[in-house]
Image 1 (spheres, rainbow, N blue to C red):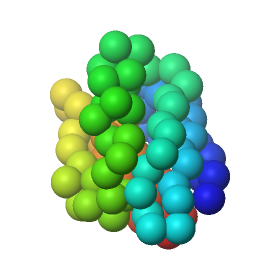
Image 2 (image 1 turned 180 degrees about the vertical axis):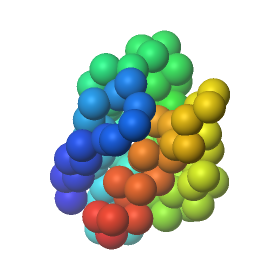
Image 3 (image 1 turned 90 degrees about the horizontal axis):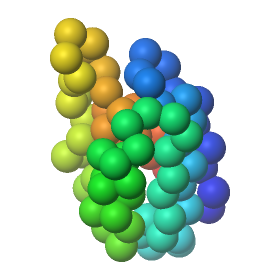
Length: 81
């Protein structure tokens, strides 16, 4: 399943994920945001269970913001699965 999620309140504008029938993330890309950090997150989550990733990242904040790119990734997964 391909997931495309428009983010809100963060530097990253969009998240795209590929999740297989077993909820395993096979691909993750971020448009905009901190390239090095988001490339690192992509490498860490590929091969992982999407729902477990969502649970771990849920509620992560960035500075004074009430959300973050990882939190938006969590929302993308929860809203799509």
